[in-house]
Amino acid sequence: MQYRAKHRYADTSARKIRPFTALIRGRNVDEALELLRFYHNRGAKLLEVVVRSALGNADDRECPDLDALVVTEARVDGGPMFKRMQPRARGTAFMIKRRLAHIVVTLSDPGDEVVETTAAPTGVAGTAPAASETPTPPAQ
Image (cartoon, rainbow, N blue to C red; front, side, top):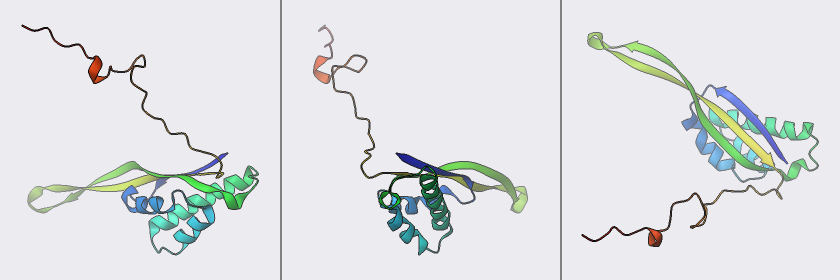
């Protein structure tokens, strides 16, 4: 079963949090929390809170084995931006963009496999024909 937690409108840009999501993806929950605990970075702290929330959701939904949960999805999407104008020299202005992020963490049991979609085999209805099946233009 999957247990998900989201932090929407996190007050940090997605670019600053993404390295930490790559660090914990595919790891055990306890190991991921230990890794994030010792990073003195605001993005790591925000991600740690979301992982703890997902673990709390698993506990609330009565997960049989909390210690065996694995981080199957750790994703950071860009959120909206606050845009402001900064006056500059000679009457020009620069745009200040305050970026926000949406953090999504999904935990699941180690036996659950995430099914990935693959490309359809050639010759299936609704797909493009293979290169050998394309008609040749008439000779002139």
